Length: 166
Image (cartoon, rainbow, N blue to C red; front, side, top):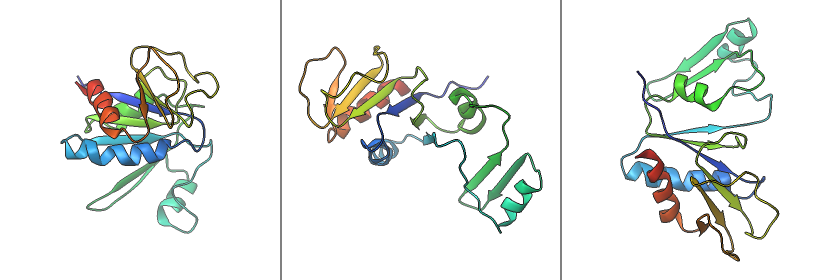
């Protein structure tokens, strides 16, 4: 039976620093010996392959799954017949060899999450708060039952993520 891979979502409005945080956290987790996967939700139509390349031709010809590999990388393009593929399905099929998956952009799932805001006092939270949730802000201006950290406090953020792995 496959293990449950812990997932932590990083959420927030556009341009608040979600990608910046993930890029800063990955090396800290790697330094501690963890293997890390990421999932980025994007617009409904994205391309990782482009016209003229062999894999593009394979996919355009109707292949259901196309992959390209080298000694250091593997990319898989798979047709899906769903409007929205659940994170648990993505993790179950592609992330069995990692200790933690950091997800950017899937706001509707109830995974432990880190909410980033430019200012703590900005509009209402984007999700219902619960115990596996922290907030990161540029300015801490209010009390909260949820831990609130400054954007530069990467050690506290890393500890929160580690608490989800154990």
